[in-house]
Image (cartoon, rainbow, N blue to C red; front, top):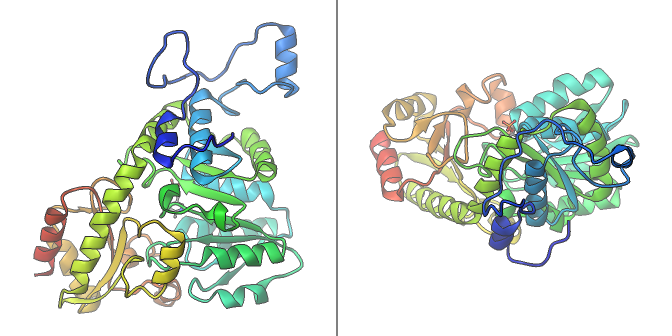
Length: 390
Ligand SMILES: *Cc1c(COP(=O)(O)O)cnc(C)c1O
């Protein structure tokens, strides 16, 4: 999957499967579970993997292939696999690469379900995980064991929007021969390409900004050809493949990724700046605000700050609840990266299963609010938040 060197926006739009004889302009949907062979020799050679072609949609399908090729170009990756959800991508990628007895080093601040996978399910296969604080990368080398295989991180983090230095992580992984995996869901390949900083594999939940319209669940892993070969062999057997329809939706969504994400970021920065000047706000965190503790790192590795702004209303939990009950336009929902702006209270929703101390360890205070800033006019977004604070 060579990158022909066109610009990001062009590849997002012009990476397409070959046209059929119908000369369609937009890619068609291949709603088929399997593919036919020309003759016995074609069938034999296909199964022997002497030729690259579609056999069965659990392995590959023209719509998934188009999506994978596109995301590979966007991330600077060699190969990939498309999954039915972000978590299917996370689980299949890790399970394909880890053996019983292996060890993972992960940032503490990772997506809740990924955290649960590490703490509750991988121990069943004797796979242990050690955690480092997203704001203190100096502890990582001390956690390395002879059986450590993977270094895992997300940046910016959910929901605390902390920023981890990808270059530092990449160097540690290289020095100790660890597979470096980045969940790049919050940034999208438009804002940040972790492979440039040494990541071996990049995982996305396509459900968030990639689709951007709250329509499909999807996931994708892309990265080095060697590692993806292992991930592909595991994934084609275990069956987490993305449906052709959802692959088609997502591939169309990516055509507008750059233009959508630009507006998300513009709106988010305006909202963050507004909140910073509001006297009922305790603090605001957004990677492209100068006040963000890792602002310089964010600028080094990201094109803009993303769609998520975190803040705390003065008066803690009670004031936070009042704020949520007064919201009129924005949605109270757990999703993010949607065209519709969403407000979430992590302590009572996505992270409610953690204790207050566990939440504090991953940077979530009880009164913290997370806003996924959407594509409505910024004046209306700010007006709703203003009246809810008033
Ligand atoms: C949502 C999310 C996931 C999981 O994706 P699903 O599509 O919901 O399975 C993984 N990582 C991050 C950072 C997410 O936000």
